[in-house]
Image (tube, rainbow, N blue to C red; front, top):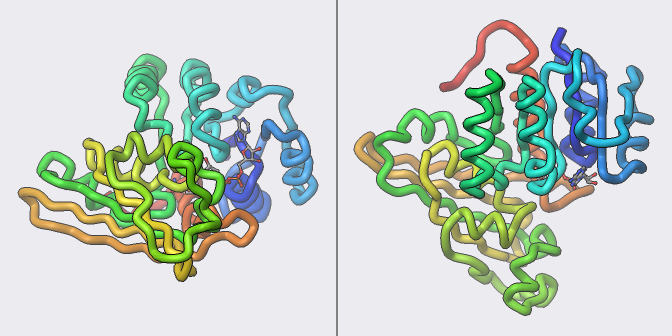
Length: 270
Ligand SMILES: NC(=O)c1ccc[n+]([C@@H]2O[C@H](COP(=O)([O-])OP(=O)(O)OC[C@H]3O[C@@H](n4cnc5c(N)ncnc54)[C@H](O)[C@@H]3O)[C@@H](O)[C@H]2O)c1
C-alpha cells in the first residue's frame, strides 16, 4: 500500500485525506503539515486513522512515504518541491501555477531525472488536458478564458496592482488579457488551470480572466488549434462554498490522480 504525506490541510487537502481515510483511495496517510497548525489539527480530528502532524514541511518526505501531495500554495511548491524530489519521493502538485516560473520548472524537471522521481500535475478544474498533451507537438495556438464571480477572485494581487476592488465590479469585466505566466502571478489562487493547460501544451497559453457578477459557476473555456485540427473544452464548475476560489472538480481531480497513483488496474486517458 502506498504511503502518502500531505502538504496543505485546506479544502483540497481535506478531501484527499477523507478519501484515503474512507478507503476510496487505497493508501495510508502517514503525515500532514500546514503553515496553520490549527488547519492541520482540524483535518486530523476528522480522520479515523490519525497521521502524524510534522513540525516542518521538509519532514514530510522521509521514509516510508512514497508521495508528497501539495495542496497549499505556489509558495509551498517553491519551498518544498525540490527537497521532496531530492529525497527520492514522488510529488503531486495542485498549485500548478508555480510551474509558470521557468527557473522552478527547469530545476524540478532536472531533479526528476537526477533522483528518479516523478511529478504529477492533475487536470484540476479543467478538462481536456489529456488531448492537449497528446497534440502538444502540433499545437499552433492555445488559449483559455476563465470566468468567475468577483467573490471567487477576491484577494487576488491583480486588484492591488490595478488599484481596483473586486467588490466594486457590477458588470461583466475583462480583468486580464495576456500570458499564463503573468496570469498566475496576478491570480495565484485562480489561474492554476492556465498553468496546467500550458504545461500540457508545452507552451504558454494566452489567458483572459473575466469577472462576472452574474456567474454562478467557475467557467474555463480552452481553445486549441494546430496541425491535428482544433479542440474546445468548457468546464462549468461549482465553486466550493467553504473556498469559492476553488472548484469542486479540482478536489475530485486530485482524488482521482492519487487513486491512479495508488491503485493498480486500468487507467483511462492519455
Ligand atoms: N490545479 C487546479 O486546477 C487547482 C484548482 C483549485 C485550487 N488549486 C490550488 O491548490 C491549492 C490548494 O487549494 P485549496 O482550495 O485546498 O486551498 P485552501 O486555501 O483551502 O487550503 C490551502 C492550505 O494550505 C496552507 N498553506 C498555504 N501556503 C502554505 C505553505 N507555504 N506551507 C504550508 N501550508 C500552506 C494554508 O494554511 C491552507 O490551510 C491552492 O494553491 C490552489 O490555488 C489548484
